[in-house]
Length: 497
Image (cartoon, rainbow, N blue to C red; front, side, top):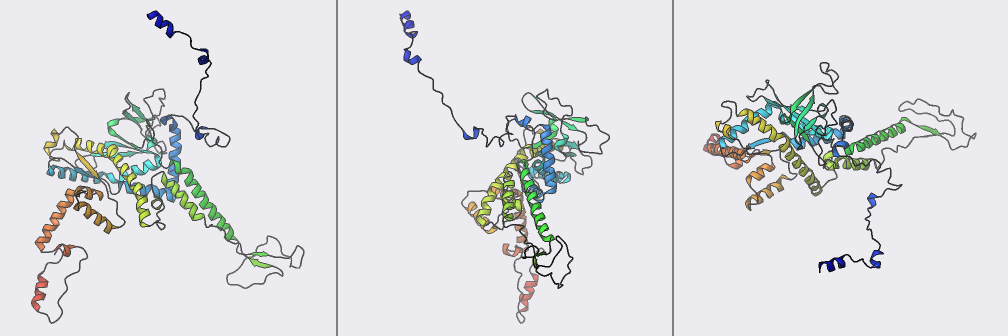
């Protein structure tokens, strides 16, 4: 039986099946074709890994060019400054979420005093600008005895140039230009040069002198655009050629306008050569005085060169270039140019939605990469200081629950925003915590402040309308009225007196 089945399975197929030709299906993409027209355009495309594509010499060139453009281009400087100011603002504010309200207020006050002492907001703004024009920023936790706060922890910002491995070590895949990783891809230590490579006065250090700093003491702030990317490149990298074009075009327009303006007047004639016009030396120049009358040679006329620059398309060209430049930063044109003359209310709000969403993403990244690390390092030192923080915090081993508040974004129409806020609160689609968070405020702090104000107003006998700034003052009685009314008016408390 089994022999019969085997013979049937191994029976040769009919000849027509053997002659059947195999069909190969090929997919075609126009963008994958290389021809004479697009060969030069795609010549620089490569298949390098993320870290090989941004090797140290490439990142150094991009950093230098970006910094040069930001230092010399007014638009580039304004865009980077605006981005840092909108992202960081006056600095983040901490709200602790422990079950003990008194402990929360004590920690928040101590951390705020320490953050002001080290200039945390200024350092964060600098790091945000550095990520835009250098691609990345580093911060090292150090001890600063000069601080006037009990906690001597400090954050020292570093430029990307100073984090590098001076002796290569390309043979070891764990080394990626100043960062050593373990087998799981976690940073273990950073190599920090003792002197900046561009510092010309660091005589006491050689280019090979560096410190091995553990990863727990280093903050690395950058954006990874590809999986496995370990170092950052400037965010304005795609816009660098556009900045150069903008500057060249502006200089060319100015040069053309100046050239046309250099000729005050031109003598010309319609007479043929050797005709009736008086002979005049070609290309000769004559000094002219203001408000003078003169006589021209016979047959000659006085004319001026028509100024053709700037052309009517000059402003439109600059607008399009700036719009393309700002797109790589998710920034609308009116923010990049500092000009909203062509916007109406609806278009301005619509363009700002994408920008503010990008700002919130950046703030969330800063919280995870920088602020949470700073808070953990600060708490580990602060809890050891006797009487500085509540004693019960020494027994807390889990991560301290907290959240960060940033400056709110101002609404273009405050009246409409206030109406919408009242509607949301009335139909219970929002909370006071969310509404105060929109303005970067702690709802508990604001309610306590409001309670103090209401208590003082009740104590002084004032209504809410009277306490509003700019409210009309009580009107004095007209002459001839009862003097008792004037005495009662004098006895009423006004303002904070």
